[in-house]
View 1 (cartoon, rainbow, N blue to C red):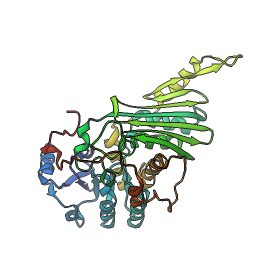
View 2: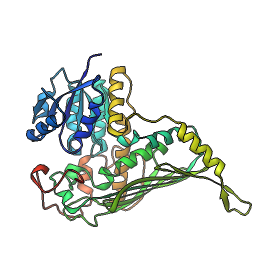
View 3: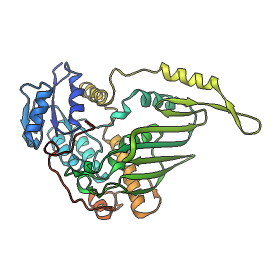
View 4: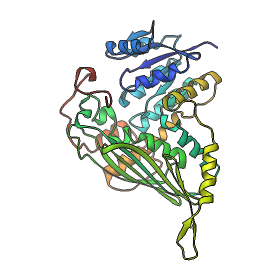
Amino acid sequence: MKKLGIAIIGCGNIAPAHLEGYGHLPSMCEVRALCDLYTDKAQRLATRFNLEGCTITADYRDLLARDDIAVVSLCLPPSAHCQVTVDFMDAGKHVIVEKPMAPSLAECDVMIEAQQKSGKILSVISQNRFRVAPMRIKEMLDRGLFGNVLLSRVNSMWWRGSNYYDLWWRGTYEKEGGGCTLNHAVHQIDILQWLIGMPKSVLSVMGNVAHTNSEVEDVSMSILRYDGMLAQVNSSLVDHDEKQEFFFAAEAASFAIPWHVKAVEQLPNGFFKPNPAQEAALNAHYAALPTLAVEAHSAQIEDVLLSVQRGTAPLVDGTEGRKAVELITAMYKSSTEGHEVALPLAADDPFYTTEGMMARMVRYHKKLKSVENLEESEITLGTM
């Protein structure tokens, strides 16, 4: 089968994860173009990944008419996702767009409309779905092995120093769309709604307690209300560790990601005793489910390319990507307005549009320092 031509738009921190994913599939695809405002950065990435003959450009519009490019990975700031997605969709390309899908539901809907018009694939990066534990737990939930889930708790805990927000597009609602809730906890919020669905309402509080060069929140806490269940989502950039945890209390057992299961049975007086047989049975079910040859970005990229070849839908399409944005938008609305917010959000809600959100969001601090290019500053692209 003819190889699919690939273009990467944006050569910053996340682009190598996409290139590694495509690199696992040499018989299926070939990276033919890299685009970044800083072409020297794109050239270094081409050298690092041995992309001989790869086009380097500063303007993604140079690639729209290229009929040898079929799939485009967008590794851009959230504020650019909508327009660039629409342009490539209108040009007949399949698009993989980084999280979050867009800063607002209105922009998500514009992207979905462009996808439906083009008939091409739009997939939103949700790479943490493509790991063994969430995949297996999703299967077990769908089989009803845990019974009804009664309580869920998610911790999206990160640490980022003060100069993290010196990069020009970080720390502003106009460019980044939001803080830790949108740009860090989006992974866990996506998995939560994938596993147990969308809530009926959300109640949130947020603040910025440690990052004075940022308008956006660095801590948030949310309570999600479902029929017969409550969930809690906590996110921060001030934890002196990085850990992402899920806990679920269900009728048959409590279980967690990373995988852990505990089961009890009721005593006549209403207390409990351990239920090792139930734990053993659930552990056996979990262990018997399929593993993954690759995980994260590589697994999602493979899913998209197989969908392109087969003409099928990817696991995470635009509609799925929109759900996380809707839930996070409700969290921002609740925190800003100080009350519980019902879902779904209507198209006439002030928080539906980017402009409506920008006019209402709490700006905790004024951004005073702005660095254009990480590679020319003391800021690094990760922990090294």
